Length: 136
Image 1 (tube, rainbow, N blue to C red):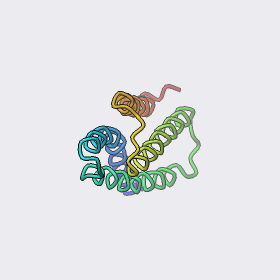
Image 2: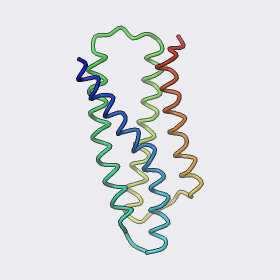
Image 3: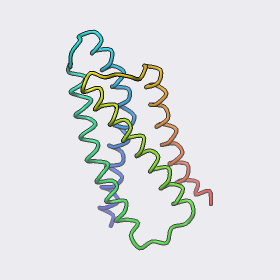
Image 4: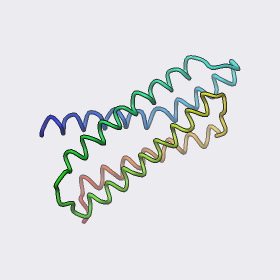
């Protein structure tokens, strides 16, 4: 079971890196697209990072469910799962932004993307707080 936990933590770390990096990369991709008027290397990098981390997210989910199988969840775990679900929804939204950008559509402003990026940081902090403090 320790190996499953190690794989889970490693995949969560990789997924979180992308959650923080892809919205920021969209800002730079948008600037590059405005400058070049076409799809450039930042777009390719952003898409590859999102796809790679999607695989990590799936592995993190599977190993997390494996670790949780058959356990009686205290209330704090339900809160953690709700926060993880919110972060996953944020990640899916990020994917929609990436797919739109792939078509050359950048609807969101730099300011929106910066705030959107920070929301994920607060989500990660909330999850870590719940796991460490176990408030109830």
